[in-house]
Picture (cartoon, rainbow, N blue to C red):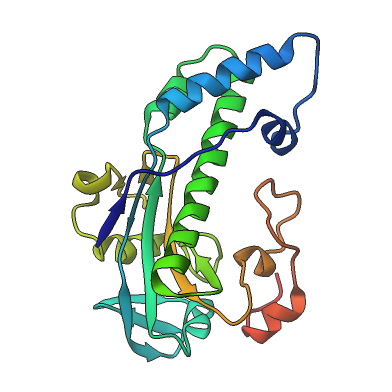
Length: 227
């Protein structure tokens, strides 16, 4: 089990404007720069991950270190995989708490967006770290709750792989399977021959977090019913 804390986060103003669909107004960039400075002072990214091995495969199930996960898609993706990398990533509660205390809803929106960008960069950092340290060329990942096939209730099994997560990186799981701090993500990285993104199997329209186009043919490959 490993913890990464020295995680570079780069909040570039031009990239942020593009990512958050910033509408330029006279003097507005000065305010955005100030929000970026606030965010940089409050972000405390941490990564918890471990090297794990698939122990058993069943029909639409896979067991990793004694934890059984029920997902047709996950089982299919790990069909020829032995070594996987479960993870939990957070940027801490500082920026989240500051955003919640803002009376300016626009400022709150952009601070939340900055936290999401930082979280995404931390996930990219972990991916590159795993590739370098374990000699991997292509990694994909899945997260509980990203697909109906692998619901958020599977968080409990994932967290069981790590033990006392709150002591280790300050992340806990609620009885409703939500993570606290809220700006946290969890999942499993795994070696892949082709890049897989859960978005490819989700037909939800106008999703702000979409990273790949929906692929109905891929749903058929995984034997999922059309939505």
